[in-house]
Length: 267
Figure 1 (cartoon, rainbow, N blue to C red):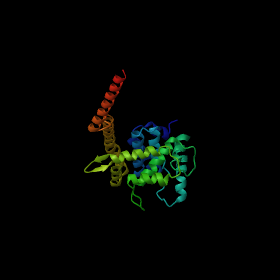
Figure 2 (figure 1 turned 120 degrees about the vertical axis):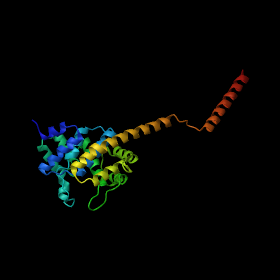
Figure 3 (figure 1 turned 45 degrees about the horizontal axis):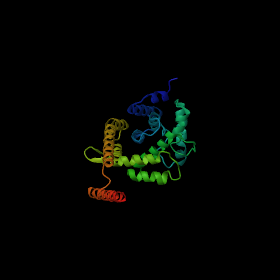
Figure 4 (figure 1 turned 135 degrees about the vertical axis):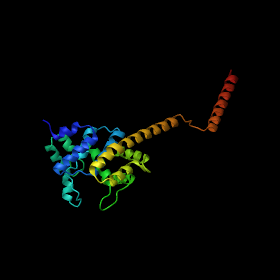
């Protein structure tokens, strides 16, 4: 039986997946805005760059849909606690299997669903970290390094997330990479800037998928080549300075000479 779930899961192109979700949201009034695209791009980069052992197709599809019943009103605590479970139940009606829906339900921990799926831990990190980078009515967005500290020591304090350490390494790497447009800017901050300066959702999809993605993928590839070259250079670098090496060799030669004289005298 052909379902919406089959349709979007069969689509491997991320830009097309985003457009499919955009038109579904238009038709059904589910939650879908620029923040969803923003977080999905972070998920794409994290899984690809860090070689995370999860199904990338499931992750990206879930990122686009797991907040489908979210509301903008953060003051509605009851809705904050229930939207992930409501979204999972809704996705079940679209033909997604129980495991996919469970993944989406576990984007937060309010339903106490256990044991958690591997993909859910990725969704949780991306959702919370990505949300902290963006402005809200009550605060401006945090810088990536600040958001990572809050994620580890506040949001997930006392909780186990199997990918937290790897995600921290990802953020550290991204903070080392700059993208140049009119000015140079660190890669994640560039993505935030594009988000803030683009009003239309469809325009943001295009800018992320057709402008930002090729640039950041190339920049990460070049960064890794540089890091590898530096590691290789370090591996072949002498452990000691030339002066120290001469002293060590002279000392060894002196010991060998003394040992030779000793053997000669003994004979």
